Image (tube, rainbow over all chains, first blue to last red; front, side):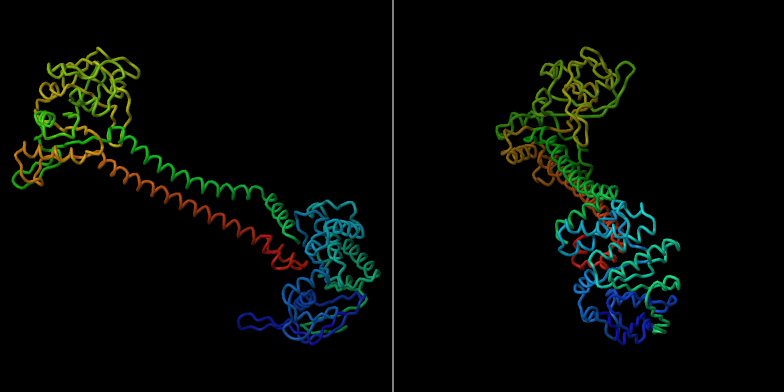
Length: 221
Length: 332
C-alpha cells in the first residue's frame, strides 16, 4: 500500500548539497502501525514530508495506494493529501479562531461533501476521541491533549488510507501522551493504517513495527 | 469549497480583526473623502472669488494713472497725477464716447481717522454720487453722498460697517456723530451694507466722502487715483475701452498709445487673473490630497502584507489538509 523504493532527497542550498535521505526503500501494508524513529537531523521529518505528499523526492519512487506520487501535479497532490492522508502534527495546528467542530469540518470543506454530512461526521469523530462535550470550544479553551485529540478527529474526517503523525506526543505530558497512544491503538484495531514519527522509545513501543533511520539511511526495521 | 462558503469565511476573518478592518476602511474613506473635499473646496473658492468680483459689476472698467515717464525714466504704475476730475467730466459729456453709461471719478488715500478716543487707519475714498451705482454700493442706513454735498464741499462721510465697528463699536449707530479725518471734523451721514472682502482689500473698511471735499479740504490735491466706468452692457466693453482710451490720449495731447499715461482695466482681466490664481490653488490642494491618499494606500498595503504573512502557517496547514492553490488564492 505504501511502497518506497530507492528514495533520495537532496537539498541544494547555494553550492552546498545536503543529502537528507539516501536511497531508502521500505513497504508499509494496510492495517500496520509503524513508528519511524531516529535522532534529530536523521531525515525523519523529510521522510514524513515526502510520505505526506507535501514534498517530492529527488530520486526514487513513492507510491501510495497505487498512485505514483512523484508524477502528480500540485492540484492532484492536494487531492491526495485531502483524501488519502490524515495529518497529525506535533503542534496540533488547529485554526485558533474556529471551534473544534469547525476545525474537524475544514478538510471536508475542500471536497464536495454536503454541509449536513460534514457536521454529522465531525460530531462522530469528535465523540470517538472523547470530546463530545467540547465541540464548540476554540483551541485556546482546550488543553494540549484535547487539542491533539481534535487534530486526530480532523485527520480521520476524510477517512484516509493512512494517518501520518509527526511527533504527536512531543508537546504533551507523559500521561496525556499515553492517552493519545491509547487512541492510536484503538484506531489501529479498527483497521486504520498509522505511520508515526517519533524519537521517544516508550512512545515508539506502542507501534507494531519500528523503522530506525540514521543519517538518511535505514538503520534497522 | 464553493464561492459562497469562501465568501462567508472571508467575512468571518474580517470580523475577527474588527479593529484592523475598521481602520483600513477608515483609511480608505478618509483618503478618498479628503481628495473629494479638497477638490470641491478649491472649486468652491474659485467660484466664490469669481462671484465676488462679478458682484462689483461685470461691465466695469477702471482707468488708473499710468507710470510717468520723465527723461526716459519710467516711474511706478499709479505714480502719475495726470488723471483729473475734468477728464471724468469730459468722458461723460463727449459725444464720441457712446458705450459708457456712468463715469465715477475717485480719489482714494489711506488716512488716520479718530472718533472720540478710538482711532483707525482706513481707506478714504472721495467719490461722486454715481459711485454707489457703478460699484453697487447700497446704504444700510442714512444717505449716500449727494450732488449737493459734492458742489458745496460738504464735510460729510459715509462709513463702511467695519469702520463703524472700529470707531464706535459693533452695532452702534454713528449717524449724526462727528469723526476727525486729517484733523478735520466730518459728520457721518450714512452706513453702507456689508459687502465682504475681495481678496486684496476689504470693501467694508472704507470711508466715502465727496470727491471735492477729499481733494481740496483734506488732501490738497487736484488729481484722481482712478476713474470707474460703467459700460452700457458687457458686449460693448471693448468699444468703451477704445473710445475712452482715444479721448484721454487726445486730452493728454499724446499721439502714441504706447506712451499713454493711464491704463484701462476691465473687470474681466481681473477675473481671469483671479481664476488663474485659484486654479493653481486647486491644483495644489488636489496634489496634497493625492499624496495623502497614496500614503494611506501604502499603509493599507502594509497591513495586508502583515495579514498574509501572519497567516502563512494557516495557509500551510490548509494546503496539508488538501486545499488547492486556487482555493487559497481565492480566500485572500
